[in-house]
Structures are given as structure tokens and as C-alpha cells.
Image (cartoon, rainbow, N blue to C red):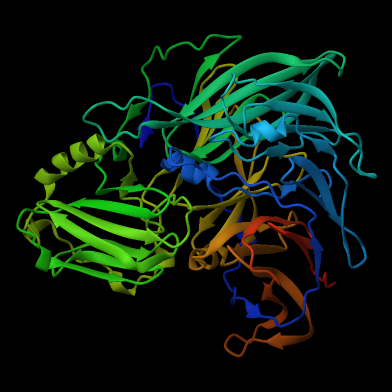
Length: 597
């Protein structure tokens, strides 16, 4: 864990017991038909893929899976997307059986040149108010728009501000934006994320990459002329699961496996920690048990084994989505569900001295954030010299004995072979923290332990996005507080998606997960075609009685499966209270949920 003399207010996760259903009987498969409406797109969707230089763990986790459907929290029946010509369109489901798509709302300037820029990111868009929008073109430019009232018919957007705010050539994506007013000044706060490479320290396992969040304040006194009033910079050595601004624009809320620091401020210089910087204890001193690298075609996982291990001692059991690799009658090196399917015939392993390398051939040329789902014992690295240094240090820790310290061995209370892949949890300790924009310090934090992050979702436009964490088998929804500077909790338990933690872990081909703003259902989509909908409670016409307990059941939880009429990859998913929007490269699908009273 991390500790400091500058102690932040410590909070915890307080479960609302009335939201927990200890008698949940699981989801009943429903064959009820759900109407699906389709709209063929006139032009394809703009998709930017990571380059060979963008295959760090930071890039893979934060940028490899992009949701190309953009929700408008102020108008939840509408979604937005950007086509191949870099024009923005609005799509919305009508009360009838059709989907409408607007004409171009705005064409991003210099699209012909900027779309070809090497290493650019996907276009990102946020809506801080009902009449403002903030856009990044992924090539380094930030736009602020007056969209007009988006409740009515679509209108052409007007540019209020346009600049490369992080400097020429600095590409970024928008994480969040909020609007607030102070006297006669309007301000739009923006969080802009990019990944930077740094010089790694020799002899350490530290990743050479940083996740950087630029906190930019754009201000206006007349709502016509806007300029950058303030810029701040936050850094983290690990990518985050959640990042957002509080609605007052006073602080940044971040969830990550290591604390982030606010390192610079254009208005108020950041003072060094007079009581001592954050002291790193525990896991950060622990060497990774293996290292791995990747490119477009292959994953290479490297282990250090004892000198007595030979080729005859190695075993490998490999299927398209599962690996079991290790030393016979000794050590399991890698075991579990693979992040994405591999080509079994093209995969192999080699051993040379103490260096054992497992090479997995990718079926799809996508970036992997991890090799085995739930396994965080390894570290993704890019520098070959760094790999050699780590394994040279690991060599002294390996042994050719089955149990060199039998007196320390304790009998386990369970058989590990009985565990399933979806029972695995992350070894990383995760923190949810509030970083104040004026003091530059972490003022509040919550230790999330091993509660696995599942997804983020906006439940109310007037509040910061909520985060869904695994709690036992369930998915628990937590609403961050806006500005908790005292001892109050900064995470409030507001909802529960029953058994969803277990369900999501079992969907190894999932691409997006979400839930409706009213938390009445959760949805998971595969990379192609399939949607899995989990309705939390649906009334039934005739009450049932549980044979074992005698308890009368008036509502049941249902699972519904939708197979879309497409073979294209799913590029976007958004859930509203009564509709699910799904985007592919050529079509927009709207699944209409039947609301039963």
C-alpha cells in the first residue's frame, strides 16, 4: 500500500444492505422477442487504431477499446457518432419503428490531412451542458461548441473556441468536461488524457510510460470569446479505471492501482511535499513474476526458471481461449482464460538456459491489456534491456525444490482446482481518490481492495459518472460525491446489479458493458453480433412459489439474448432506460426494450 505523512481523509465502501438480495435465484432465460430497428449508414465510421509504437499497457488499457457511440446525458434518447469524413451526426430512436439520423451537425476542419496523421487517436466528444459540447479531434485540437438547445430539431454547431491546447503535435482524448459559473465568468473544465514515454531508471522494473491527464480551464465573461485561463497536469505510473471532474470543477476523481499526483499548475505553483513524498511500500517493491511484450501479430511471455529445468520438463495445454503452461510436477507458470483468442497451431514455446518464452499468435490484430484475465503477476514491457535486467534479478529467487520451506507451508482451506476463471480477482490494490485543484493534494480516498472495476456509467446528468465494482458475485454501483473535504464518504452505494460480477467475468468475448440510468438492466455485448441483457426485476402475471422456501415470487430476473443481423465488429454500445443503441461499421441498431408495468 501507499502511505504518507500528509494523510488524506480515509473512507470506505459502505454497502447499503437493503440493496442486497440474499435470496437472488439467478436469471431466467426469456425467449420473448425484442424489436430491433436497423439504419444503414451512408458512410462508414471513423476508426483509428493504435500503431506499433503505442503498444504499452497504458495505451492498451486506455485507448485500444474505444466506444464510437457518444451519449448525451442531457438527452438520453440521442447518441452521436463521427463518420469517415469527420462529420458529426446525431441518431435517435423515435416512438415508432424507425431510427433517424441527422444531417451533418459539424465537419471537423482539415480532416483530409489530420485523419492521416500518424498515431492520432479517435475523436472524442463530451457534453458539459444542454447547449455546450467539447470535442477533441484526436490529432491535438480542442473545440468548444455552442450546439443550441439539443431537445429540439438538430442545429448546426458553432465554434466558440478552437486551439491545440497541449501544444502542437500533442495528441489527446477527452475524459470529461463540466461547466460552472462564478460571478459573471463562465468556465468549462476539461480533462485531456495522453500517454507519455519517460526514461526508465536502470535496474528497475518501472514501466517507461506515464498516463498524463491535462486539466484545462477555458473561461469567458461574455459567453462569446473564450480563452485558456488555467492548465494543470496530473501524472500516474499506472493507467486508471475511472477519471472525472466533480460538477463544481474543484477536484478530479480518479480510481487507479497507484496514486496520481498533480505536478504542475499555471496559476498556483505546486509546492513540494515538505513532510515527505508518498512512501511506496509493499507491492511496488515486488518484482513481476514474468514479463510480456506484444506487437500486431504475437504475444511473447518470458519466464525465468531454475537451471535444472530442461525442455522435457515443460508442458503446454493450449486452446483458442485458454492456456495452461508450466513445469511438470512443479510449477504452473500461466493458467487461465486468455484475453482474446489465439491461433493454436502458430503458437509455440522455447527455452534457452533459464529463459523460457511462450509465444502466442493473435487471431485478431488488437492490443491486449493483459495476457490472462485476472492475472496481474506479470508486467508488460517494451525495452529488451529492461527485460534482461528483471530476469537476471529473478534468477536468484528461483529454486529447483518443490517446497524449500515446508515448515512455512499451511494447509489451504479449499482446493484451488475447484476455482473457476471467473473467481479470479486482481492482486492489485486499487484506490479511489479525490485530488483538490487548489491544494494539489489528495484530500479524500477510499481503499477498494480487490473489488474489481467493471464499468463506468452516467446515472444522472447533474452528477459525476458512477462506477460499477464487483462485490462478491454482484455488480455494485457507487456514486461519487462532488466535493467531500471533511470526513464524509466520497462514494455512495446507490444500486446493485445482481450476480453481474460473476456474469461479466464469464463473458470472455465481451467488448462493452453498461447499464441503464435507472439501473433496471445491465447489458454486455460481444465483439460481434450478440447482446446479453440482464433485467433486474420483471413482474410476472401469475405469482410463483419457491418449492424449497415457500416464498412467493412476484417478479423474476430475466436474461435476454439478442443476435444482431450483422457480421461486422461492434464499435459502440449505449444503454438508455428503454433502448439499447449498437453501432457497427455500416449500421446502427436500436433494440427496443418492452417496459412491463
